[in-house]
Image (cartoon, rainbow, N blue to C red; front, side, top):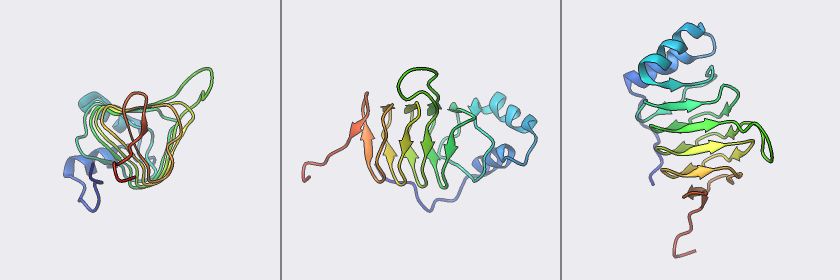
Length: 142
């Protein structure tokens, strides 16, 4: 999985981020939700969305800088039990299509979450996790 770096934000991505920035009225974020099926918290820094459709992020989630989210990503909270709460996403994290991240966990800086992964445990910085439940991807050379 290649890290999406240095790519310019598309005009659509820029518009969505501009509308969802924390300084903007929530009316704009509601419009984004209705048109693109994207629910984002008030953003403090831009989020890169490679395919900005059907993305849900709990309003209490802390998103780091330079986070990339692909289509179908859900980052949500857990109400009860172990790891009740919402995730903290570090800087330069990439979360690929249809991944689910839930609970009071931390996704470390530079980590990658593979497509379709279900993450409910902490992910160390720089680690790539895949599968359901998510586990570290280990190359044959390791």
